[in-house]
Image 1 (cartoon, helix red, strand yellow):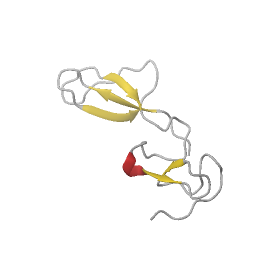
Image 2: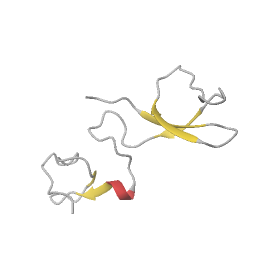
Image 3: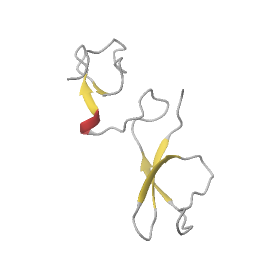
Image 4: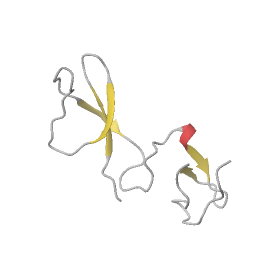
Length: 88
């Protein structure tokens, strides 16, 4: 299943943030007060990706074959395409 691009949206008054799959030309509002949310940034990895994990130190591991970084929930390395060893 291919996922759309995920974005980090922020409520300007409180600074509260939410991550969701946003679509262009759609206005997203906070459920509690109806305030419009502003897009702060895109979440890595960019769509389309097999992983739903964001790029953060705690979610990454090194491919034992090519040494590239990959998300912990992937079985195949996105760089070399070969199957990685199980995470430690």
